Image (spheres, rainbow, N blue to C red):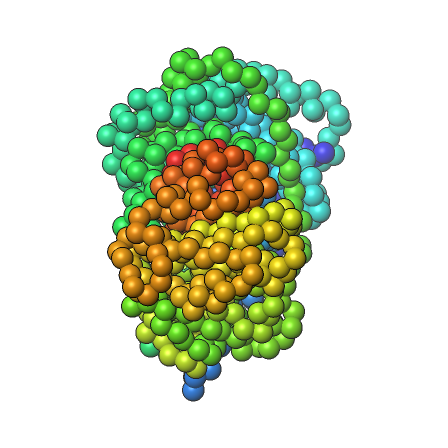
Length: 633
Ligand SMILES: Cc1cc2nc3c(=O)[nH]c(=O)nc-3n(C[C@H](O)[C@H](O)[C@H](O)COP(=O)(O)OP(=O)(O)OC[C@H]3O[C@@H](n4cnc5c(N)ncnc54)[C@H](O)[C@@H]3O)c2cc1C
Ligand code: SF4
Ligand code: SF4
Ligand code: FES
């Protein structure tokens, strides 16, 4: 613990500037921003920066990888393996510090984001405790401020004519050493001084949120009329998410530099834009009311449910920036007043100080794969057989997950289900329906062309749980692809299962995929294949009508049956309801859900439904779990 005289503050910044690119609070027009240190614009008279410090770790626009093609070969490189300049961020407030720690947890836990990690490692943080609050600050009620308790390298607390300086990490000790004679040793009594400053203003904030029972309160207020009225007010400017220190969503965009070279970029994206969750074919599972509700639920419920710490830092920026005065504090307090009598959610502790030194794999970079065969299944659906160019990838392939991300270089990347089994270790096949930009480009490719593969990702069907049971597998349209993996695994391990029923459904027989497989499977012992089509056919004996009509006559032991259904959410619900009536439990009915995906690894935020990321927590859910999700898929 040290003392720095206030008159020596710029001297210490000068010293640190010799070793770091130092960023400090600087006046720019009438706002205070975190900018390269210049004595002329430097100030200590600020409540907080106009923008959160997240942009120093997670840039508004950054490159994921470059690709280029030469003589049919595709080369991929990830730029930025060059170390960034060492930067010291001075003057970070407690609420933003909490935001950085949230990002550390978010980006550095599962599927460690190597781009974030690199940027984080090269930053030193000198936080400065607040001694005054702004009109929209409510960090005290979120428990994130006004004083920082963890997550900084060095912390300065303004006292009368000096700062109390506390170093918390090795980086902090380095800063102390670099300060040389400017720091004087402080004794423990200075902590009492610090406490006095804190006590003098901690309870004087103008606005606050009651976080007690907040999850229950939000749950009860899910269908409140307030969301309809907010939807009418919100002009979708996305200002609130841009300024939020805990908004981490991004879009992924392919940019072509020429026909044979390009780059994949990520840029900040906002759940407040209409296109955020829109799927191919214009279907959007989140309507505009749920769009507005989602942001606020995410901050006060979903993030905490998922990660175990609060999603709002109480910085108040979204309140200040909203042109139509949408105010998270007023909304929360309105809900608390109306519904606030639930139980208190367990107190959860945020983990700080993730190790920033460890290197990790390039999670966004695909492996090159070659198209070895293409089969036209229907006029709109093609089956692509792929092999990694680097054969060792196949040797080391571990069969798991539910989908891969397939890249068409220069166009984009899409999630496509695994329809094969573990025995297809050296060649993968995928069934792709032409739906929009990337799928159409994929349909144009020929045998020998190259694509990118990332994966496998997601949670697959719980094969072990199905053992010893009869199974019924239902696939509608291209939905037979995700369930095919279960069928082929069950057929390869026939003795593990009782009867197997497969129901293929489509508009017409011509629209069905895997027609040859279906015929082959129908001739196997103990396997029944049925068809539910909208149009009659002479090719097979098919029921003209809904899948549901076929269920009562199947003669399965329903209590010992597992069902796997992949169809539209409406059809999944209709079939599941009938299966429940027949005696099945909701825990034995499984489905693979489809939402807009970009990254596949729980980072871009596009696929999130309530507190669940479809790409890592799903896409496979049982019917009971599915019903617990907000109806936004
Ligand atoms: C887990 C999962 C498994 C899937 N499996 C298959 C499969 O086996 N076969 C198949 O044909 N389709 C499958 N899909 C749907 C497929 O991903 C979309 O049809 C595809 O992304 C549409 O991309 P596009 O560029 O052609 O359409 P556009 O409308 O141009 O979409 C632009 C971008 O939005 C995203 N997007 C749009 N629609 C969807 C969607 N439905 N799901 C996810 N992201 C979307 C993608 O990032 C896409 O590149 C699956 C989707 C998910 C989530
Ligand atoms: S939701 Fe608003 S108040 Fe909360 S952290 Fe984000 S910008 Fe700050
Ligand atoms: S800042 Fe206000 S108007 Fe803009 S998207 Fe957010 S809530 Fe809507
Ligand atoms: S978080 Fe990016 S697709 Fe799930």
